[in-house]
Image (cartoon, rainbow, N blue to C red; front, side, top):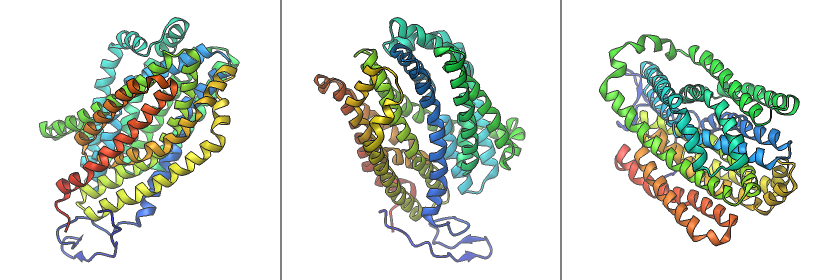
Length: 469
């Protein structure tokens, strides 16, 4: 199914200006070399995601300089609470990528502009509800994560400050997704690098110079998120299709029931999928918190290492979102299959390199994120899990991109639900292994996801493209 197709030049129909390919595709021109297309998206996306990871890593490093396990655990709890509450709305980014890429594959500028308008409107509506629910979200979130005592007090301070950046985060998700769908990866990278340099500078100033502690970390993140919104808005305004956005706000076609239902269906499934993923993350954090502040802080560091590897490998997810979305929009089955195969090969190779780097330097890298000897020692005991996680998770990351770019979100939701059930069962089955059992169950979560997605892929391709000839 994933054999490399020949991308020989196609004969153009002089009347229509489209390739004659037996009705199997509508691509206007021969696609560029596949590996170049993948890397042109994946590499800037990887660099962008590394810059994004610096938000969490800088926070953890700065607060770790205080040598206070409770403060470090509070930042982990607070950040996890907010990201759990917000990341369920990451469909704003993923759905925007898919719909924008598919419209780009059809060369439909107005559809791209309409996608932007509907996405920003959805972000503003969600943001308003999120701000109204602030007291409830904070209290229920802290209880769900098992925070207590001084850790809960510090975490409440952190969340109370950073919470006000939620609307900016939601709009940023739409703007980034729209730019990714248009392959503006270098522009996104420039914004991420700039906002992270600001964030790191503010972290160092607020925590280590002004001694604001947990509050300083929160203020640094809030400020950098707002500045990022301004920069992204400027970039989007310079794009051709975006110039139609103001006109489309009041256009009746933008808000047609059919368009809104399609958007709702896509976003509903992505919301459910992300909620299940974050449920697994919350269970991981909660199980660590129940083992005490030292295990909680150590797991926070290991999770940051996993997040760094996931964000790197997510570059290949971005590539499949865009390229599979374009191929589906152009009805080009051969290129679609080639994208899946080639991206998997690149991603597995990258995961192997990350695993090797973690095996050699991971323990020392993790130790740099705390000044507490007990946390450093505990992190070393469980560092092996950070080493194996890149290889365990990479296939599911790539398949996520395939499924999102193709709008196969219901199938992705089903596989996520099955994987979460296995994770919960693993927590019970491996409880006697302590923290090792917790990480073993988390690793199985990703392996089961990948297996389910691989099993469903051939049938989904037949449904979207018809039987292979």
